[in-house]
Image (cartoon, rainbow, N blue to C red; front, side):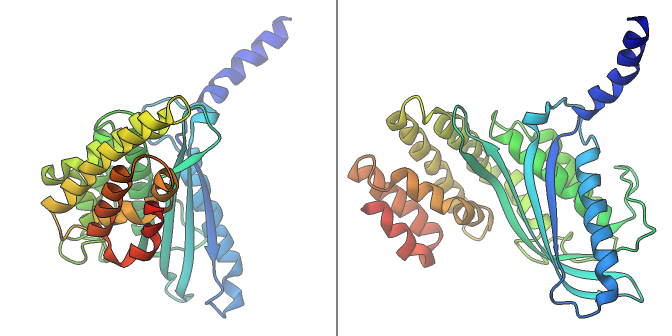
Length: 301
């Protein structure tokens, strides 16, 4: 009995740490564009290192149970690879989800395409992150997305609940601007890593932060208890989306939200609610993305 107890105590810290990680990430590498078969081993090593780094590291002081970890995926397409310089030019499609309360449904919290997911990597590289000293482009990219995923997830549970982690992501952006890669600097592209985060945290787009909380916590999470009331809350939250778009018509943040939430919103309102509610939802989505008119027309039916 005593021997068993000693073993249990010895293993307890390991068990505790296993519950500390915040992310449950899946990394997928698509190398079909690369004809050099010598890269297969490097690509698999990259995938493994990235996935382990995302999942095994504690990014915050928070404690997560296994079932509470944030599901996210990193789909990386390698467009170019230089085996001599170890340079990668990639496109990233990142998506994170969270479960809706009292249901088996998972909703997309944040999804973004990064056309400048470029870095240097060789098999001997060790991925280590220090917020005070950022010198690796790949580590900076991973850390930025890790904190964005965590921050945006927290935004759906309490109003501006992800502030601390989004500020950490912002700090990574600022410290990575001298690494010599695109995506970190202002004015390069309104959809780049700087542009999206800077706009989201801008006071002029505060409606987006209210939206993230009210849409998920007051809307989706209440759907199984009272669908009509939940739809009303979601419609009210979309008024904040409209306000954010009107405040910054050139910002990509409201449009990005409508892109990855469009099908979900259509399903919520199509054939449900009042005609006035459906028309209002249609008008909001159309004003942000007129090119989606054919798709969102379903809301009116």
